[in-house]
Length: 524
Image (cartoon, rainbow, N blue to C red; front, side):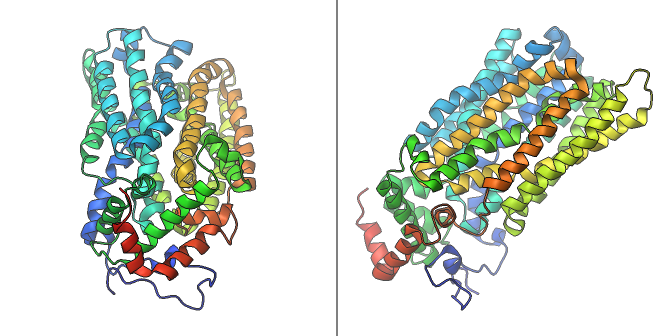
């Protein structure tokens, strides 16, 4: 079958309007055997690697806490002091949240990725050369600011530039880059354990900038979002991008024509509904439901008990009876391999299993794991308890928890970015990241203090939260698999949305030649 031959409608197709699945080509080969898709997916690494940097940061801090040279250099930080060092990047990210949406809407998707990557490079150099507690904290603020911009812009870039049939999987493997970065950091800090002097911690700190350097280079060759281009009146450029990367160079591709019309109609609907300001989240029932999701999703991810394990694994292991630094580093490294493999697996199933099923299954499984974990931790910490095999049980539960957590972690950001209309996408992802950042700040300061003072009793807090998040997802997170970005309106704004009818009407009245004429004569 030809690469650009559209799907032929059948009796099972809905009669009420043309949709993406009716025009999506049936590829006769694997995606990497098509030059345009191979090039596109390679360039999308400019966005995918963002979470690798974030994951590297969390795992590196875990590893550094187990390095005697780092602990000695900074006078063995604990409590609030340790929380400030862990949270340095989080505070920088919080500052970035106030400008990220504006930057993305003003400058597009490519330039913010470049700027954020360069900011991280500056921060990593300062981090590796830190002379005291203050300079280390300052460097982490700078890294956090760059990450804040990247975390908003990268998800927009991936969702708006990806080939339609690949969008779900591409955005879902954005989050698995986190354990990939964490994996790299874990093994680097493990390898530097036997190094002498301060380079044992300075080298891992410096290498944090490698992924950002790759991003800064790749984004120069990546295409700009066609949706952003059309929103700025640059229809010709958008058509060229879609033709090259979605149509394989075919300027009469049915898929490209459909996407152009669908994006145009969607933007017109947004403007007609005045959905261009922050207040638009409260203007319709559909937008209020979108706000409900993005406002809770960030907290769902960060207040699921993962923060205890991700940033304070050495303390958790110590409380469970595993006190040897070398063993802690090995466990940290192995959990990252485990997490990465599961995150990729579940991310690739997002279009087959569906978003809602993965999210609900994840939170129910995490809740059950935490029940057993809490019981074991309570038994282990009793006076004069010496059964080391119970401690081994905690380690098994940590691995089980990471498996279940990464059933949801790839889905949540992919889900949030796809449910938002174009005009609300940058703003909505800022809200999502803001919630995640605020939860992380709370975790960074509260977790070490709570673990030191409450021990296993602190796990009960996350048991309650996991039960609550399961209810939140059950009540308000609808299934969205199989739809284009613009077609999400059929879920949130009604089955007979203006978008679906508008696309069909435009294509029927204008045809391919009419759409091409409009593109060629559009104002740039």
